[in-house]
Image (cartoon, rainbow, N blue to C red; front, side):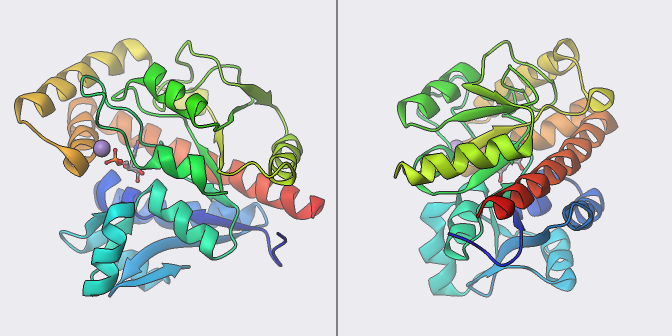
Length: 288
Ligand code: PSU
Ligand code: MN
């Protein structure tokens, strides 16, 4: 599958639900700029009036960054928002799905969803999407609000290769490491592109998870973030939160509990991932 331009998909749940305004809007614009500076074309994905859009305009991004109550759209919500012509912010799962339908093979995000701590039945739709939709997802691993060993077990069971981009350890979003190994380390974008081409040529379904550690200067050490996570997870349980409410609640509480440091870290890793994704998209284009 070749594409005329090296293209990188970007998600919109991080805009509507992942970061507070105005950081979210600044970040959405910055990620597009970083992708362009890397020589690729950014396509921010979202849903407006029921239409699945790969390549939101500046005004549309601003709308999703400021409108109250934009629905967080996971795969199960797609028919609802499309049929009822609603607006929606796309998660990793739905961004992958829409990207694939537009022939986009590379997608940069912050952290993926996974298996939740405590409630092992709360498994993000991001994981089965990675198992079935052929898109390279570039992220900083998964937040330690999740059960990281269980998340990696799921990915293994479902045949999703986990790449460490310049690392041997699965990154834990705020922290560069988790103590858990990745399946393979790639130090160059071309190595990732080669893995991807081989996976496709073998007829293996699903995506590739490329994990990039947060830049060292923006890292929040595990000892600092862990107590805040434990507290946020306990609060979510005490409030009986379920399903799609859990992740936005935990992200919001962490931002409150750790202050500006978490937002700074989040922004730094998102830009870093956009840079890596652009390099991978270019390498892919060079191979096809
Ligand atoms: N993790 C983050 N930041 C985010 C998300 C996850 O560190 O913004 C968002 C992504 O859009 C992801 C979604 O796809 O949350 C996962 O939600 P859930 O756990 O409900 O599947
Ligand atoms: Mn969930």
